[in-house]
Amino acid sequence: MRAKDYNKETAIREQAIAMIVAEGFHGLSMQKLAKAAEISPSTIYIYFDSREDLLNKLFYYVEDIFNRETLKGFDPGMGFEEGLWLQWKNRYRYAREYPLHFFFSEQFRNSPLIRHKDIRENQFRSAMQEFVQRSEQRGEIAELPPEVFWSLAYGPFYTLLKFHMGQSNMAGKSFALTDHKLKHAFRLVLKALMR
Amino acid sequence: MRAKDYNKETAIREQAIAMIVAEGFHGLSMQKLAKAAEISPSTIYIYFDSREDLLNKLFYYVEDIFNRETLKGFDPGMGFEEGLWLQWKNRYRYAREYPLHFFFSEQFRNSPLIRHKDIRENQFRSAMQEFVQRSEQRGEIAELPPEVFWSLAYGPFYTLLKFHMGQSNMAGKSFALTDHKLKHAFRLVLKALMR
DNA sequence: AAGATAAACGAATGTTCGTTCTTTTAAAAT
DNA sequence: ATTTTAAAAGAACGAACATTCGTTTATCTT
Image (cartoon, rainbow over all chains, first blue to last red; front, side, top):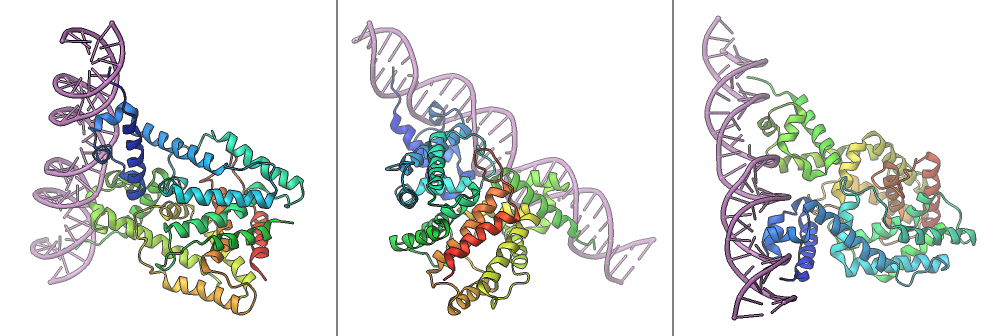
């Protein structure tokens, strides 16, 4: 029998992500996707059950890479300053290594549809929670309502990152996000959070 | 001659916004919109040139209300703490008074398409810029690269707001954003920004 | 080399899309 | 009261949509 060509599956995935980033995910048409991946429309359905299945799998695929990249070198037992800075650096590196993935995720973050339901990122979430909890117990940071903590710890980071990645821009100017600026913002966040 | 029924125009607008918030803006179909507004599809084209024209006008419409609401009681000459807090309060009130508008805007903020080009919010922008500039000159806050300032001043606010509005949620729990929590976050932001 | 099997194809399905055409209707102007 | 005008309607357009069907093709097993 003829074997599956898994290069085709990745080709489909990559092209789909690129297409969604370029035209919005409403602009993902199966027929255009087939054309971009240089295959027949029906071939897509060998690898994915449906358009919806494809979208879901894209989502999980992107999320898995994000989780893996973000946890690199991370240990929930780290000191707060070191740990949070590593998170910033990891997420920054991720956004630069996988810019299409980053835009893809941002597009869905405020979108009504796709799976705002399940939380299968248990390992990831619990690592993050443990890290914060331990930092609190050590007395490095004040005990805050979790959403207040998160807004402070990552809100500025993502706002800054989105400026940089040029999805938003202020008055037409695009901003180069230097490591220096990132560190600058980080120090201010620390100033807000640390006892 | 027969007069235009401008109730119809607003009906179209309201239904369109509701539809976009509910199903994503790819889900705005002219025929479904017509059905929802209880008019004929062709009637929409009396008030709007095309689907794209409708989307653009929706965008400007929402933006105008946002600008107006956000500038209420605001004066660029205000002290930094008072002025920024007023901005937070105004934006919070806006999001609660016009939740559909808020979701609508959030949906477009990370979307590739619509008008990431023009800046017609000149009056609004310049008021904000002047406010920050004066605060710096008065020595209330450190001079920061503008995007670093903005990430700190509003990043936490919007992150918090989105938690509250339930577009995102952490581990299935939804968070009630009390005035107390808002103020709490604000104090931390101040701690980061003020000299 | 022959047969089996599933990958891959391209055409075709029925549906929905945005938009336009033609006709009817209501209200303002005479 | 009649004429005029544009609003409003609803059917109809071709194009694009997600998906499926029947056939062909490539590769593995024997």
